[in-house]
Amino acid sequence: MRLHLRVLTVEAPRGPTIPKRPKRAFLCYPNSNLFRGRQPLRRRIGLKTFCALAILVCASRFGVPSAAQQLPTTTQEPTAGAQAQPEAKPEAPPAPSQTSEEEIQRREQSQRVLGVLPDFSVTNRQNAPPLTRRGKFRLFGKIAFDPITVGVAAIQAGAGQARNNFPGYGQGAAGYGKRFGAAFGDEVSAGFFSNFFYPVLFKEDPRYFRLGEGGFKRRFVYALRQEFICHTDSGKRSFAWENVLGAFSSGGLSNLYYPDSDRGAGLTMSRAGIAIVYNSIAGVVNEFYPDLHRKLIHRRPSSNQPPPEGDPAH
Image (cartoon, rainbow, N blue to C red; front, side, top):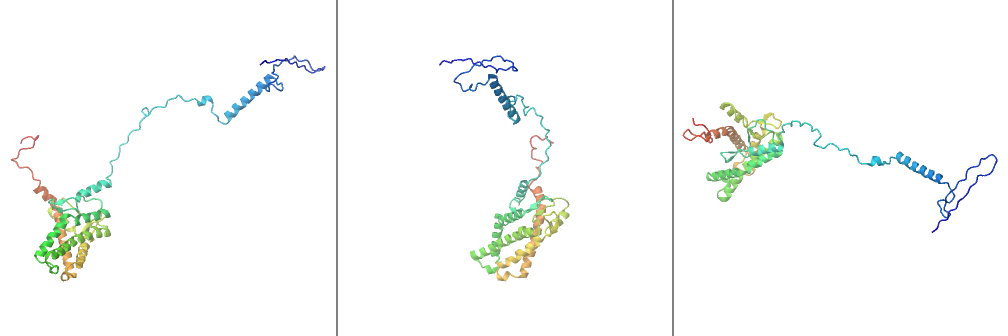
């Protein structure tokens, strides 16, 4: 395709007052829309420059980042190891948690006299935290349904049948079953009222708090007083309603299953008094048994035995 160039000559208008201007030559394409209208080249270039400047001004005005701002920074942040580590503060000793207290109570409620008789309600800590309602109920169930408790009730029933106690029950297997049920019922009801019901009602602690130190007289009197003076949940001392009312409540409840000839207010008072005496003797045993156990069971080795290895011979 051939392009024909024409030279256009533009003359300034004639007049006496207007000086003549030099002739200007323009290159144009006769069939091009771009040069249609015969606009000067520098006017078109000036328009493009103006548009470009307007775009840059708008970009800087409305926050469009420039190329220098878009370049990633090469400044390297200090690593974690280079940062100064704060000095470690000394940690406070951890407070005894509830789990550790439950573990201590679990060990205390596994004690047995001579390794056989339950001794679950004894603690050597005078400042032991109070038992919760759940803890008191667990103590009651652990004592009342211990296999030794059931075995003692079975022995009492056999001895009562041999002496023909409660003759209204009769003899034979039926009589033995009634005597066993009565003996086991006494154990369960006494534990329920003394270890759970009244301790929760009066907010008292059903455990025996062993003194463990001092003279014999002082500790003996302390053991007898524990049947009538108890620890409360607030850490104070109070009359032991749990033991006294528990004995009378258990004795009164037994009128429901004892024979007619063994019921009445007099027999109820007698059974309650016997229960209080037995519990006082049990308190003396709880106070002094650990001392007897250390003296009788854990004896020192005799002098005719060879000394342990590593010890110098005397």
